Image (cartoon, rainbow over all chains, first blue to last red; front, side, top):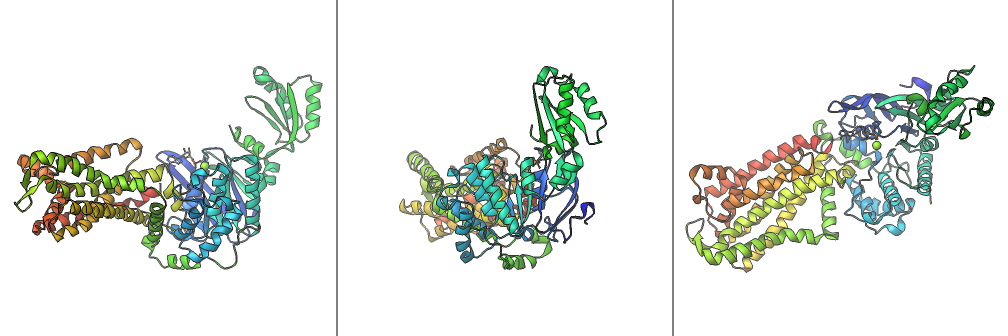
Amino acid sequence: MSEAGGSVTAVSVIEARELTKTYGDFTAVDAISFDVAPGESFGLLGPNGAGKSTTMRMIGGTSLRTAGTLSVLGLDPERHGPEVRASLGVVPQADALDEELRARDNLYVYGRYFGLPRAYLKAKVPELLEFAQLTDKSDAKVTALSGGMKRRLTIARGLINEPRILLLDEPTTGLDPQARHILWDRLFRLKEQGVTLVLTTHFMDEAEQLCDRLVVVDHGRIVAEGSPRGLIQEHTTREVVEVRFGSARNAEMQAELAALVADGQRSRAGLEVLPDRILLYTDDGEAMLEEINRRALNPLTQLVRRTSLEDVFLRLTGRSLID
Amino acid sequence: MDAPSTGPTDVMAATKERLRRRPGWIANLYAGNARAVIARGFRVIRSANWGVVATGFFEPVFYLLAMGVGMGALVGSVPGPDGQPVSYAMYIAPALLATSAMNGAVYDSVNNVFFKMRYSKLYEGMLQTSLGPMDVAIGEIFMALFRGFLYAVGFLGVLTVMGLVTSWWALAMIPVAVLIALGFASVGMAVTSYMKSFQQLDLVPMVLLPMFLFSATLYPITVYPEPVQWFVMAMPLWHGVELMRQLSVGYVTAASAGHALYFVVISVIGITAVTLRLRKLFLR
Ligand SMILES: Nc1ncnc2c1ncn2[C@@H]1O[C@H](COP(=O)(O)OP(=O)(O)O)[C@@H](O)[C@H]1O
Ligand SMILES: [Mg+2]
């Protein structure tokens, strides 16, 4: 079970083998396999349409798989949906809050769906509202909440049954930076308490912040797997030089720059040509910049930065994560 | 404030134990907790939207006033189910009750279910919990029946005040309205599982409206040539109308039982179909 990387020590809480989902003749999830260890924070990183949400729905047993096997806490979610979900907290991409109920009642009624006793919920609901910083909004209609508030309410709702595994589908998409940081903070605290987090995102900074381990998904397939740091080391160089020549000259500079990275560099060096800029992967960015200037290539702008998961995706697929 | 506790005691232990004991074939469909969905429905009714509830009540009342009292002045009396003449208002009132049970049930099980699935994502939220699709379906059908029950009680109250019921049998019109609603709601929900777009919802009135107009609601079935009569008699609403009409004057015969049986059969078929289509309906 714990082949690659050997990072999976305890018994996996989620085990997916050749998991596949097709809609008609379109394959949304294409034979993916992965394991999630207890207490781990595991990410699915990929662009829109990669199949992340579909995978999450199959884990929760709300979407039926086409092929493959899936085990969540030792059970097949397709055959034991209610029992599997008893241990899951689900934060779907679309909040799916109950707009006919107030914020507080959303939590209470949701708890009743889990069969939780009234007395437990009377104490738990205010606790979760405070966790989500929504205490003063507890009587508000859901429709009157901001996007960030709805997202926090959805996360609070997902915690009502004190889940062992929290599934978060794009937890911060659409939130402003401040709201994102509040959310990340809340998720860290849950992780500290031993909750297993499974999250999808198309933000590389989010994946870097929150995930111990992640798979990079593209077109329904896993194209890479590892820790954020490990993936960066494995698939990119230490640094990247970004140069812009303006749209007219961008393409014609390609050949000349390709020679630069090919020169005595390691195999992971290389370049990516994007519509507005060219990225040069190298372990020594400053030296590369000097070389560019020595050859008088005259880019309009230039900058050296550390490589990130965004670069991993770019190197693996030739495309940017967010278009 | 600390993160909410996820302590060593498993708050879900009781639920998990209950779910573990469920037989395998139903384990994914039904968690035995439809009452939580029903409780949610009552909470919504309590907190809001009496306006929406009220329109369903007024519709048959307006028809009764316009057609029964207004047109009735021109028509005079017509032969009732037992052959005795009754006022025109008295003739159509039971038919209006049957029709409103049908309309309300179909609206709840088709339009509302489709909207909650596609637009408000209500069911998506519900199904992220320990509920199964059958809990949701039972809960929603129950709420549709409860609404039908409220309308029937209200309408019967209006009929009584207007002096349009003449028998204690009329009280049976309330459970019969619920039975009619069950038949239409279960079949409606099964049909909804095949719906793909909002445009398809427009087809629903094209079935319901002719059924209302031609099911011997506003005039006796004998105006039609015989082949047309057979066709009308195959339609569910006609059975509802006939049964209601018989109950309103207390003329209960073997035929009344036959009409009730028709709806029992429709309901069994509808519930079976919904059960078979639950996965298609909720787990796409
Ligand atoms: N119910 C559905 N019917 C048809 N196609 C779907 C359905 N749900 C998702 N898809 C398609 O499957 C692909 C993967 O979708 P999704 O899992 O939502 O991707 P992601 O969450 O990574 O953005 C997309 O191309 C999407 O259009
Ligand atoms: Mg998605």
